[in-house]
Image 1 (spheres, rainbow, N blue to C red):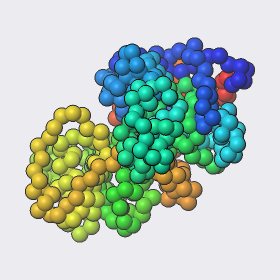
Image 2 (cartoon, helix red, strand yellow):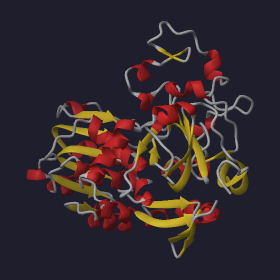
Image 3 (cartoon, rainbow, N blue to C red):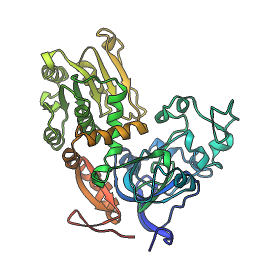
Image 4 (cartoon, one colour):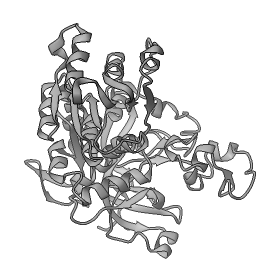
Length: 419
């Protein structure tokens, strides 16, 4: 059975918090715009936001109106989840075929944000219908104005931004997905497709290092070694960090960080309730004991934020990658003013970061062997809910990245492909 004749496919549907279901009767996606391509999924990862959406819901899915759907796409629930995917192109739209940049059989990864350039794909959505007329042709996407951020190339913070597989439109926890060509980056055939599925989460960290102006030879403190923190380790190596130190309470993650070759790993629990001891110990691990050039908060708690801020040296920079909840925190401006320190945020990624990660893999600044160490489990689509999502709920600290695949697995290894 070919992609052209299949009517339904297998996948994982999100109906709402605590309601995630495997189905073998999901309608096949179709190419409805000349810029679109159909991808046959190889692997799709589960990220922390996926897990949060599954257990508690998230602001990504909260955007969906029961009558009008997602404001950018009009897509309603249920939806196929998944935004960390790799796969192979099996069908292309007319403009993609004419352009020739992407062809059948190309292995690709997808930058999954949806932004102003995607409006033509959903001309009947609320955003498209409510959009004012463009002021000029330059500031226009098919008759609809670009937001000021997209106009400047900052698609990662588009005013209308949504994410494929997170409420905006169907994602990669299925056999097939349809996306627009401007979200794709080719993957060289020598990069395994399971490692390729890591390009998206690695791009989150790579974007932080690129946009904060990280300088070769600088020291980096990484606070929290979940998947984003681990990505920061690999990104720090890619950007030529002089010293990399991690702070992480979970033993499995500390061991993972050590296996990736960091200079030192510290368990903040060893300080008990003495926060000053944590700061003192971490700073002692920095070059000259004066503090780090950069700190990256990958956890999103007041104590991890303050750890990063207190451990950078004068004129150092704290970068927040964590997606914080709506809870406020106590903050004292003199904590950074007195040392002329800087605080900045990093949100998602752009296509440039996906290209940067793949290039870093190509010239061995990001080791494929280290990438493989991040994959702690592979699960078939049929078992994605219990073997993937629930496994993370039960044993989150034992995993870095669980990958879901439509392929048949035996003892965690591919046996064959299913159509």
